[in-house]
Every structure is written in structure tokens, then in C-alpha cells.
Length: 338
Image 1 (cartoon, one colour):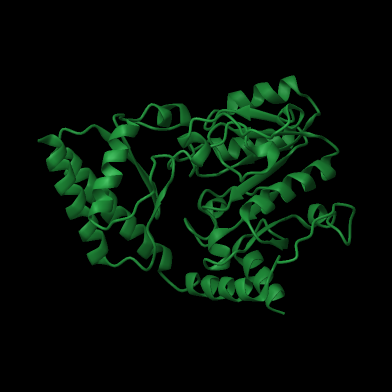
Image 2: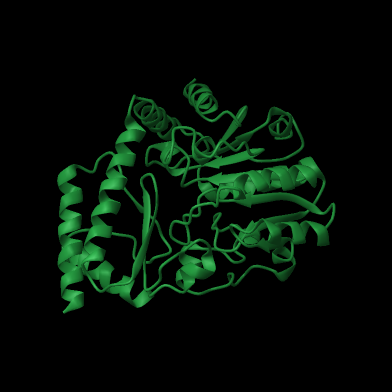
């Protein structure tokens, strides 16, 4: 079966995944992973990080990034306060904030969920000790660590961010690239956890279109393409070329900006010199980004409309595409300086 072939390919690429359950969206994947973590630990609280977006299920819209951050909404209408109270908020790239929550809610936290590379407040890299620290803290406190790799999975490396940074979570959520652009996602992890899912275990999860053959076939084709030699070296080279070109243009302009990039993921933040956590990202010049977005759109270059969404380079982009981008960016910076 195609589903089995895809699951075997994912497990071979992502060592932390021993078993995989397919769903139709990243929201379903994160929601189901959290339900599973609560069942496995017998606890109800979860910890997420300010600025990380994990889909639009009720308990995960507290202090979310992406569109929520763009609209400056702390949460969503229609979410009962009792649901939100089960979600605790830590600071990204700040392990001490996590330690304080575990100390306050001892033996109550089921899981910590995190984007290993923050992609929904723009791109924010993890500090060198941040992800290993999460592993240690969760294990010391009997909680599970969930990596939301809906964005980073098969994008920053063949095995995702966890292979890039050599960190092994208990559960992993995948999406987007997994379906080759079609509606497909999945979550997986250790067998002893995944075996709690029905029909083997008591944790119910189902979806009529989960693992539909069309999306699975597209996902298999995508993973096979990404497994070819030098694919990620090419994406890194493309990302480096674009970043270096933008930095050179900025150096000759009067614009203050910083660029965060990991592989083919990149964000430019205007009006600020450093972004290492969401609070710094929120201090960027959003109005300047809006002008940048519309100027590039006028030149037929379509970018994310806010600095809280990551730009992505793909294998479909040619060198001439990147040159076109840099020429348009250079033209805009010159006009902005005028």
C-alpha cells in the first residue's frame, strides 16, 4: 500500500519516528499529538512558546504567531477560557522560563510543543543550547517533547530540523512538503506512545480523507526527489546567495535591517539589528515591510505579506529568479533612500 510505503520512507528519514499516523492538515497533526501526549502522561497541561503557531485548534491559539501575530490578536474569539488555561506560555530561546513553569506546575505538564526553528514570527533560529535543553527538561519532568516540523520537516534537511540540530523529540508533526503540495500531514514518534492510538489503544483519532491516495502518491514522489544527492546542498547555496546579495545591497543603503536564515527559510526584519526571540521580532518596522512587500509585488515577486511569515526558496527557483529578486530589491532600496 502507498500509505505503508510513505510511512516507511518517513521513518527512514526521521529516526525519532517509529510509527506514523497520517492526517490531512498540520492542525490535525498537532491537535492529535497533544491528545496522545495527555493520554500517555495522564496530565492535562501543555507548554507552548510565545510566537510559535501550531494550527488553529482551541488550545493552541494562545500567544500564537503567523496571522494571529500580524493582526495583534492574543488569542481567538470562541475559545473558552477553560481551554486556554490548559496552555502555558514559555519564551522561545529561554530555557529558564520553561524551568519556572515546570517548577510551578509540578507533575501537571503533559508535553512541550515547539517549532524547532520558529517560522511563524518570521525565521528565528534556536540558540545552540535551546533544543538540547528542552530534551533534558522534559525528560527530567516526565513530560513529552513535541516538535512541530510542519514547516521545517523535509525543508531544512531531509530528516527535518531534528536531524540538523541532532535532537530527538518524543513526537513529531509533519505537513506541507509531506504531501507534495496536496492536503497531507502526519504525526509520529516512539511505538509505545503511538500504540495508544485507536484501534490498538484508547486514544481516538480519525479522518475520512486522512492518507488519501492522491496526496500520499504526491508525498512519495516528493520524498523520493528530496532524497537525491546534493538536493539540500543546492537549497543551502541558493539561500546563501540570496542572503549575501541582500546584505550587500543593504550595506550600500541607509536602511536598518537584519536577515535571519536557515537553509531555504529566510526573513528580513526592518528597523532592527537583531532578532533572536519574538519580542524582538515584534519591534521591527512593519510599515517598512509593507512598503517592501508592495514594491516587490509590483515587480511580480510575490512574498509573504508580513514579517511574521517566512520566505521560502524552492528547487523550482532558478538562478535567474534569484537575480531578478535582487535587482528588484536593489531598485527598491535606492528609491527608499531617495
